[in-house]
Image 1 (cartoon, rainbow, N blue to C red):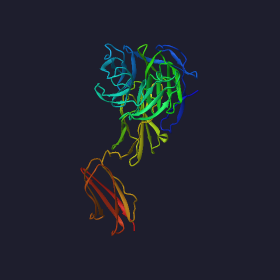
Image 2 (cartoon, rainbow, N blue to C red):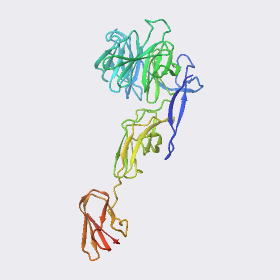
Image 3 (cartoon, helix red, strand yellow):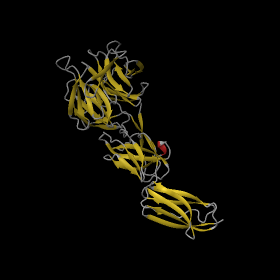
Image 4 (cartoon, rainbow, N blue to C red):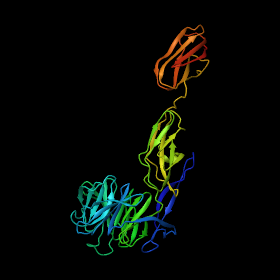
Length: 453
């Protein structure tokens, strides 16, 4: 029995958070269609429900992907043949049909999104046994031939390379395992292959070094590692799985016979908040990030540490899912800090941390101009004079003896707002009481100090 493992953080406020490992292993328990709300049991007795889904209203749907905003679904075998194939867009939140573009392929059997463009796999001329690259609005940008192609099905992308499934149905004895091939998305060159634990591929999704795929021959769904080992397997919720993807923290499976996309929760962590950054300001460290497109995300957690190791950081606060910024007012000036943000869904699952943002905290802007007592006092031969400037202005700092005679000018020029310190060395002066005066804009302050030799 195999298990799919992932870490779920359960941090406490202002404490070093720990990770526990949640093991979920799910396999076939029911046959045929699984309507909304029906329990779906796994091989460890864990049950979950299909939480939602939507009807696509498309004849012979094949291929499923998510482009960050919309689900894309293709169909094949439309009329008039062979130019009746389309790629349909369904809103990622409402699941309503919003748009369609003509498919460049006559038999599209796989779709994937590489982060910028759509790719379509073809199982018939015009682009025979190839992958076609399309802009989101439909125009063809290029295509690559597959080095091995007798019956391709399913398509995945890792941002650089493409992966496609190859079914041995036509050229090999029945029961022989299918494969996933890794190819260069620039020229189609074969880079690697993985032998699958089943005999066909009808949908494929690449996920951080692992693969999810569905098999319409056995009506199965599989999660495998890069060596082809099964991490999880299950019967499909419909009799003809034709596409699979992970989006918005859920697994989605398209059924070609029932014309429906099923959404179910198997404990997939929510997506990582994108575009995270930190900026040091005078009174705080401002953190910003992009809001998640997943409706399952309920809040964001903010972590702060003094090293780049996330596992030593502490959760300092959380905000709801409508926020995309946080001002950390607890950072001390002059210290180097590391920050992260995570997404948390309604079931309490937490995403992996965002990219690390490092920042050197600035000192807070003083609320008023103030001259402080020097330290040490009495002194010999030197002492430190500190003052706050609430605004950027011209500053004059001078030292006088008891008779009012000016003995030293320490500062005479413009200075930025903030805390400033000046060292005074009493070389050539005799022991006694002296005064130092700060003049800055409308402020004048005088303090007394004593030189002992």
